[in-house]
Length: 175
Image (cartoon, rainbow, N blue to C red):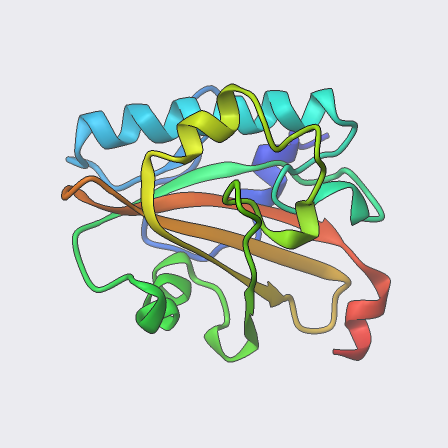
């Protein structure tokens, strides 16, 4: 059986290196070490927060019909990956950019789909605040009930990265 983080990574078709379950991050060789370490820690905290609140992905939240997927981190580095260039993020991750929709964020920086007042505090949220210019997009996998959430932010002046999570919504088949 695939681990939830591996199942999330299997949704992506990307040139970033493959996911190591112990590292919880997709990043190219030679990526900024500080950023990669930060994102690895953030992914581990997301995993803990999801487990503490009985969901597979903290980004997808408890609304997902299954807990098959987990949250993983990704590092894109420098480039134009701000909200106006969300298509570039999707392309870099190998996701269909034609299917993206913006997802509002709560005051704590989580997608509204994941809103849970109990998650809105704690170490995960404190670490999440270190990402600037955060935004979230979602994409439905064509022909499936799977929805991928991509939370993107800028890490200092070093570059862009974030978290990817997924969930199951059978009503997304009609999107």
